[in-house]
Image 1 (cartoon, rainbow, N blue to C red):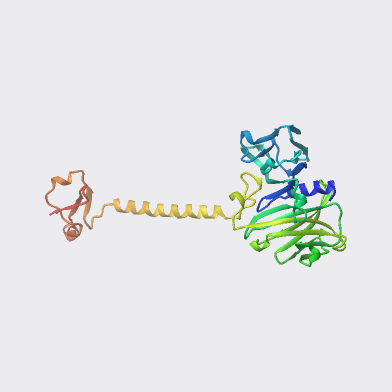
Image 2: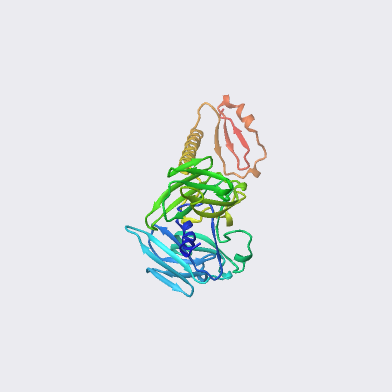
Amino acid sequence: MNVCHLLVVCIFSALTNASAGLVIFQRTEGKNFTILWQFLTSGTKYFCKNQCKDTDTLVQTTGVSSHNDRHSIKYEHTPPVGGTLYATILNLNTADSGRYRMGVGLPELPESYRDFEIRVLPAEQQYRSSVPSPEVHIHTGPAGGTLEIQCPFHASRSTKFFCKGNCLDGHILLRTTENSDCVDRYCVDFRPEPLMKMYLLVVTISQLDKSDSGRYTCAVGSSLRSAYIQEFDVSVSDGLPLDGKVESEGRRDSSENRPTVLVWPLVLAGALVLLMIGAVLLFLCKHKRKPNSDGPRCEFSTQNAQQEDTYESIQDCGTRALDHSYCTLKPAQHMRCYSNT
């Protein structure tokens, strides 16, 4: 694999607009790492690690570029708004492994951002590992979710392949000469990427299952023997994204990676029900306060209930309705009846 190829596979996942999980970039220590991310907002650009607190900020600038020791960022404006942000770490070591974020705004209050993870492999591992291409990226996602992976290629070819494992083993999930096609839970979309001067084969796996975990291959070419290939791994978790995060890229107040919920109709319906209940209660309250000349009349009394030695029940009071009796409600919620005759 040549140097140019190494750079391409390092940056392709950052072009994703929405992802149900986190991308883990695997790199061998001693190498350089560069990732790019495209965005549509403007403001302070930053590159940070872990929780992006004050001590976690690696590089931050309002200009077009900045560097700090082995870390640097570079910004290229794309008219009319937004642009491309490059983040680089030179001479990777095992201490560089961890969670990272690049974004626009402020690290502690980002407007738009990209989360990813770097896993630095010991230099000797590339020689003793029995797994070919140990530096392939790992795309993580929850069971039941959807993963979208972008495979970059420098040339356009007629046939597109998407395989589980090695395509030559015959585990071909999708093979098509169309630019867009779907088979079962798998889809491909082949399109040019003018900014990067390359082509992207976007592969999608929907309704993820634990059995979907493993190595995959996307390829373009007239045949598998002569095709250009990209390999990646998929890791499916038990229904929740890693770290409990639903989105790894997007706006802080965005719901791009959350299921669509019709909230406003429910709120309006609830408010309408409350208004109707309030109107009914108000009507009943006014109706009870209106004197009734045909029945007993009840008034609230401030007299101490303990000074009364004789009480009559509400039922007894009701039996004197024909005598135009009236009642006084005592503070102890007893009622005494008085006759008008």
